[in-house]
Image (cartoon, rainbow, N blue to C red):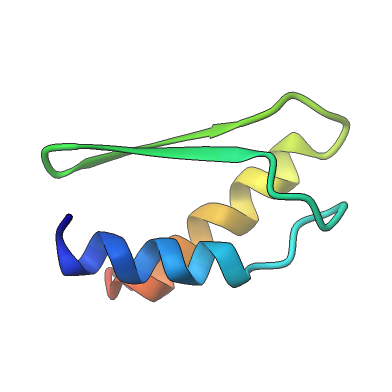
Length: 61
C-alpha cells in the first residue's frame, strides 16, 4: 500500500460524516482511488466529506 493512500485512509477514518457512520468503501487500483458510499439520505454529503479528508490526508491538496 502506498504511503499517500495509507495517510488518506487514516484521515478518512477520522472524518466526521453526516450521521457519524462509516458507510463507505475505498478501493485503490494502481494510482486510482474509487469511493463508494452506501445509499442514504446524506450519501452525497458523506461522499464530499470523505473525498475532502482523503485529499487532505494524502497530501494531494
